Image (cartoon, rainbow over all chains, first blue to last red; front, side):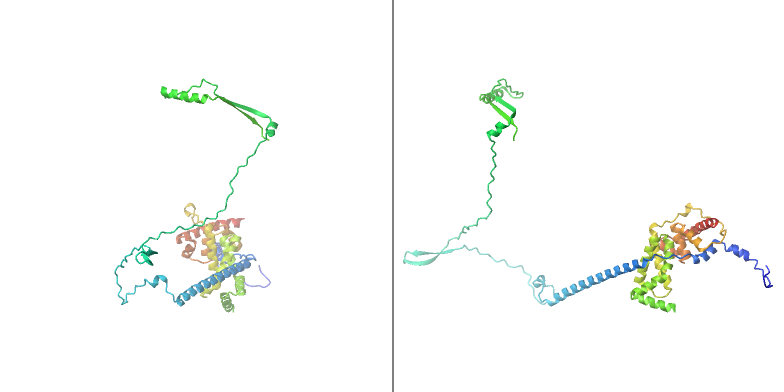
Length: 230
Length: 176
């Protein structure tokens, strides 16, 4: 390995190989290479997102500040109105006697009951005094009765009575439509109707028989012709 | 010079200056997205998490005292957002069912960042989160446990498990 120049050669330290081997140790390699970890770059739209978020937060802040200012003004106005108005509140006007330093003698006696006199309503009526033959107003005790009052009639709307519409079926219409069914009901023909009275005594059975006879006597027949409606 | 400009940028962001906010976004979007994407392993979710993180950063930038670097402060917010989102589908493999015997610690060869990134993405979500928080983001086990709602010892054991899986995965990748 002689070069252009005849320079002397130097031998490395005997520990070099050991040091090199030692540098292969994981901890040593980590300590060295952790500083050389590759860097990553974020996407270009990251700033736009941050800006939008900050704008939104600042507008939110403005909204809360204005809301707080309005509330403060309202409460201040209410306090000012309370101070300026001279009217004492109703609940304090008569009953605010809680001042312990007051020299007033407050009589704590129960209120006296006032007697209520009952008086009959009287009416003054003129009549002739027979002894003197002159008109005089004399007080006559006469109870006044409540007069009847004409109560106004409620003006309710008059409703027209509902009239059922009668639909007449002409004979021609009936004749035109053929009869499909004929039902005949007759009564008073069957004499062999028996009444089962398992729990009744004989007298009751006779009475029932008589009642049934009364029903049977007026015999008749009812014929219904059912036809198809137009 | 840069730090002075950063101070001006922060002052403008406190006043909700939209141009300053955009400048801040442009400066840190790649670093934050890389961390968030590695935790969530899903582009759409990482996108949402980063959007929420930046909104929170702009809202709470007046709280930044300037004790540490602005980038680190922003990264904390972003990582927390990502962890919060990942928690919905996070599970921790019970280690009593797994063989966690320590084997050979060396790999057969040397790896690069791309290979390591691929191996990290193949890890289960629970131990991956622990690995990233402790080894990449520099959280202590107690902080990591608090963030992931697990105990400190679980965090330690999950990290051990993650390294074991990483080694297996990297060995396969080196042989391929």
